[in-house]
Length: 242
Image (cartoon, rainbow, N blue to C red):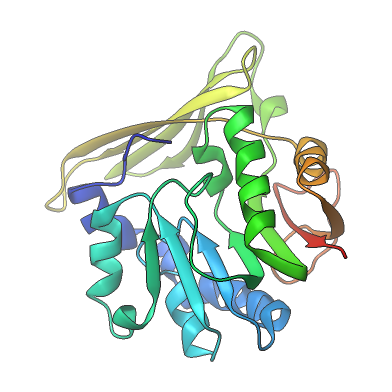
């Protein structure tokens, strides 16, 4: 995670992805987090351009962010209200923000940006240091779609159109992958590839236990639909007991 993949034009175009920036996608996330935060300050790990942090702060929640990429922070600062969110620049597995928080959260598969198990455990421990007693940690992350891979295949497309192609190249022996993105036409020709480490719900629960956190709830989406064997992602909430 010491490598900053979200620099330059990647940061500039990050919000172009309407699939994650549309209010229909953002509003349920903000509703869920605002409900958990109540009157307590919140810490967003990997705050990026403020896709979630800004609307959450507009709901009256004091938000602090940790972000590795100065270019992503610049995009946040350029938005209305962006100057009101304090951001610590650094790796969210180890960077320390000022103060303590009633809520910490890590959305949209960002836990996978930490490409080793040790770093992911460090992230949980770092969050635990930031949380007040009774504070909660929320992660949104995909369920690895390994069963969708045909025998002998290693690539799984997740976005296909006439201007964009996205696919994951999976290494199941090492629980890792590389996410590849190609944009062609409409004024943008760009290639972006980034490694990641996928992680299972039970493994995250063990990481939480190591950090002194316990599972409080788990859902299939931000609207609190049940988490089942057919869920493609999960929203998990751990709390820091006394």
